[in-house]
Image (cartoon, rainbow, N blue to C red; front, side, top):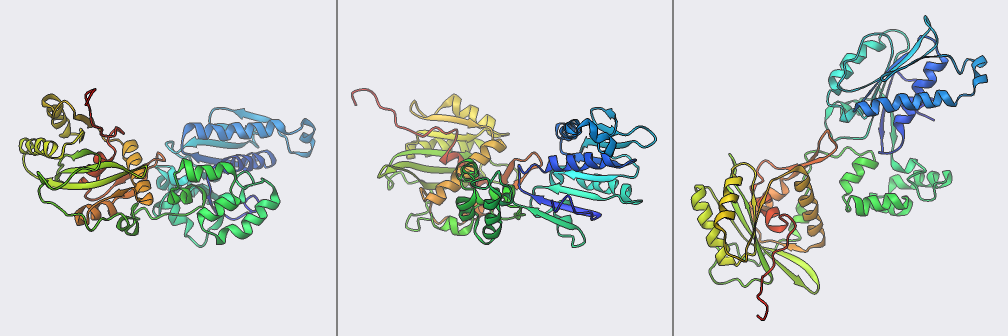
Length: 440
C-alpha cells in the first residue's frame, strides 16, 4: 500500500522475485486510465510476452468491475484493446496504456513511464533517457522496478540516488513466502528477519518451498539467494571462491612435482586427467586427479599439475606419457577451438583399451554446473590439492557475473589451470573406473 500511496515523481523499487510487482504496476496503470481522462502510461518490459501480460492483467481488472460502477466513473468505455495498447474513454478524452518490450522505441508525448525489471533490460539506459522528456509537463512520473543485478549499471545508480523515493521489498514481506502465510506471521518476520543472517531467517520464517529453494534448488548458494530474494546488490567483482574456503582444502604435506614420477605415488583409487588447451594468453594445462573412497565418502585429490607452451605434437606426446605413468582411466579434453583436433587425434590414436577419452565443448551451463559442484566439494572438504600458488590464484580469481538472460557466467582473467581442474574432477560426469576381466 505504501507504494500505491506514493505520489513522488521518481519512484524506484528493489524487490524479491515472485512478489507480483508486475501485476501491481499493471493494476495501478489501469486504475489511473479508468479514473482519469487523457491519462497516458508507457510500460517497458524485458520481453514481448511480459509486455503483453501486463495488458492482459489490466483488461482482467477492467472486466472484474461491476457494470453499475459506470455511473460512479469507475468503469468507462473500453476504447481499444490491441496487442500493445489498452485504452479507455472515447475521444477526445481517451486514456491509453502502452506496453512494449525493451527492444522497442519510446514515442513522445506526456505520460507516466514504468520500467519493469529494469536491471535486465539491455537498452535500459537509452530507453530511460528517451522516456524522461515524457514527464516534463504536468504530473508525469517515472517508476523503476527490478530485482538487483550486481553493483553496476543504471538501475544500481538510480537506487543510490537520494532524491528518489525508495521501496525495498524482500521475501519476508510477502505472506506467500512466509511460513504460515498469515499477516501476523509476516509482521513477526518483518520485525525479526532483518537482524538475522540469511540461512537463519529462511529456516525460521521461510515457507517450505523457500527453504527448499535455498538448500536444494540453489544448493546453499547464499549469494544467489540474496540477489534473487533479499534485495542485495552483490559485487560482480567478488570472488566466487573465497580464500578462506580454498585454504581449508590445501594439503600442505603433498609435494609439488615438476614431472609426474614414474614411481613414488600409489593411487588410492582411479585416476583422471583434465586437459585445457592453450589459447592466446594461456598455457595448455594437464591436471591429474585421484578419485577414491574413504569411510564410504567419495573424495578427490589433485595429484599433479603441469603447464606447457610447447607445440601441440609435443603436448600430445607428453599427455601419452602422463596417461601411461599415472594409469589414468579417463582423459577429459577441452574440445573447444584448437582442442577439437587435439581430441580427435587422442580419440583416433587412443591411450589404451581401458582409457575413456572425452571431448568436451565448453558451455555456460557446463561451467556453472562444474563451479557450483566444486564449491560444494570445497564446503564439504571432499576435495584436496597441494599448495600450488598458480592454481590457488586462478581459483580465487574466478568471478561469477549474471547475464541479462538471467544466467551466470564464470571466468577469470587467467583460468587455464581452473578449467583443467574442472575437466579432471568432473568431465562429463563419468567417474574413472578400472576395467577387469572376469576371473581376475
